[in-house]
Image (cartoon, rainbow, N blue to C red; front, side, top):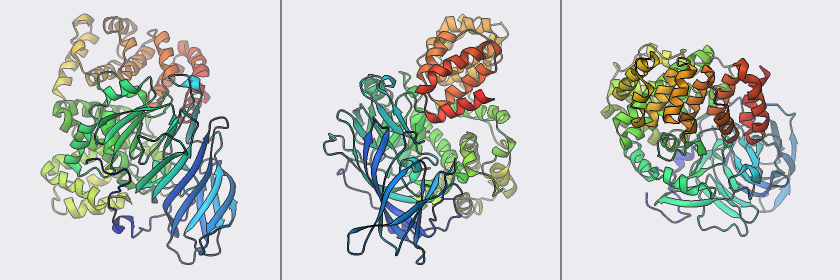
Amino acid sequence: MRTPITSRWAAPVITLALLGPVSAFAQDPLSYARYNEVRTTALHLDLKADFGRKTLSGFAELTLNWLDKNSRTLVLDTRQLSIARVQVLTPAGSWAPASYMLDKADPKKGQALRISLQNQPQKVRIYYHTAPTASALQWLTPAQTLSGKRPFMFSQSQPIDARSWVPVQDTPAVRFTYSAKVAAPAGMRVVMSAENDQKGTGKGGWNFRMPQPIPSYLLAIAVGELELRNLGPRTAVYAEPGRIEAAAFELADTEKMVTAAESLYGPYRWGRYDMIVLPPSFPIGGMENPRMTFLTPTMIAGDRSLNDLIAHELAHSWSGNLVTNASWKHWWLNEGFTTYVTTRIIESLYGAEVAEMNLQVEQEEALASLKDIPVAKQALLTRDPDVNPETYTDEGLAYPKGAWLLRTLEQRAGREVFDPFLRGWFDQHAFQSATTEQFLAYLRANLLDKHPEVMGQAELDEWLYGAGIPATAQRVVSRRFAAVDAQRDAWLKGEQATADLTARGWTATEWMHFLNDIDRKANAAQLKELDQTFALRTSRNNEIAFRFYLAAVHANYDVREPLNAFLMSVGRQKFVVPLYTALLKTPTQAAWARDVYRKARPRYHPETQGSVDKLLKK
C-alpha cells in the first residue's frame, strides 16, 4: 500500500505548531481549491448509504480558516456531485443560504464548486448526493461478496477521488480533522479511517471521530457485512464473516510490527492500528487509511508469508500519513520513504536474512521494470512545470528508487547517524505536508553539511532528476538467493531434475525470486513438470500463483482452468493487468482472454476496468 488503549474519545495532543503556520505551497494543479486564501481545518459528514440507488447523501460541514482577509469565495473540488443547497453559519448562530455555481466539468479534475460569500463565515454546509458512478466508491452486489447475503461498498480516495464523494479541498497540501455520522441498512457495519466504536450497533447511525489532521485522500469508508477480531491491545481486523478467522490468523503479528516500528521511528501517534480485509475487487494491495488500513484478500496465504504488505501500510503511519507529500509531484516522499521503512521493520521483526531477500526482489523488479517505463517518468522528481504530477502515481518506480536513495544514504552515513536523522524528519514535520525542497533543506542541514562525504550534489541530482537507477547504487546480494540461483541455472539447462530442487523448503520470497528469473526462459515442458511436482497452479499464495501463471502464458503452457478462476476472483491490478497484457500479446490466448474479461469485468473495480480497457483498445 503497529500505546495502551485510552478512552475512545481521548485524542493525542496536537500543538498549534503542527497545524500552522500554513506554508504557502505552490498551487496544486490537480485541485481547484484556493487553499492559500482559505483552508479547511475540520470536516463533519452526515451521510446515508443507499444501496438501491448506489449513493451517499447528506451534507458536509466545513470549518474554515481564512488566510486572506480580502477573500470572499470558497472554491471546493467536486466530481459528479449533485449539489442541493449551500448554507453558511451566520454570526447569530443560524444557517443561511449561500449562492454557488459549478464550473464546466473537466474529465479528470471534475468541477470547481464556487461559493460566493458576503463575509468570511466560520462554517459552510453543502447538501449533496453522490453519483452511482462516483470514481471513489465501488458498490458490490450480494453475489460479489463471500456470503452472498448483503451488498458491500468501499472507497478508494487516492489520489484525487475524494472529491467524488465529499465536496472538499482535495489536495494533500490541506490537512483537517473530521467527524462523521453515517446511516446504513440493518445488519451492516460502517467503518471509516477514524476512531471506530467496536461496540457500536449502528442504531441511530454509526459515529466516527478523527482527531488528527489528515489530507483528503485519506478519507475512507466501507459498509458491509463485517465482523471483527482483536489482535492486541491496539490492533484489530475487520472482514466478511467467511474470511475473518483466516484474516485474524494471517495478521497475528501486527501488534509486534507496531512495536518494532516505534523502536525505530518514535511513538505511533494514531491511537489504534486497525485493518479491514476487503472483497477481492479492491484494486491495490493496501491503502494506508489512518486507523483503518484497507487490505486486499490476496495477501492471505495461510502462512503469514506476505506480511511485508502489512509492514508497508503500517510504515505509512510515519511516512505519508504523518509527513505527507504536499502534492503528487512529490509522491516519492510518501512511497519511497515508506518502502525504505518497510524493510527496516521486516529486518527488526524477522531478521536481516529475510529483509535481504525481500530487498533483492524489490531491486531486481525495479531494474526489470525500467524497460516498460517511459524515460520521462523514471525520475523521482521533474523540473518541468508542465508535467502532470498525477502521472507520478502511474508508475511504481518511486517506491524502490526512493527507498534505494535512502538506503544509499544510510549505508554511507551509518545507521548510528542516519536513524536519528530520519526519525528527526518525522518528528519535526509531524502532521504536516512537505515538498522535496523542504526535505533537501533538512537533508543538507542535518546530514550532508556535517558529513559531505556521504553524497555530493551531482549524485543527489542524478537520484532525484535522472532516469533509471544510478550506477553508484549498491545492489543487495542474498546468500540464500545465491543457492536458489545455482539450482535455477542447472534446472534451466536440464542438468538438475525438477524433483531434486529443494523448493519444498523455500520461503515465498525464494519462490518469487525463482519464478521471476525463469519467466520467458523456461519452456512449456519445464513449467508443466514444475507444476506437477509442486502444485503451483493451486498455490494459495497469490504472489507465487501470479508469477507462475505469467511464466506459463509466456511459455504457452496451458493453465486456462486455474487462470480463469484466478482472473474471475482477483481484482488486484498488480496481478490482473500484467496477466491480461501477456495474454493479449499471445495470438493463441487473446480471444480467450477477451472472453474471460467480458465475464470478469463487472467484478473489477473501476480503476482496474479502466486499465484493462486501455489494453483492449490497443
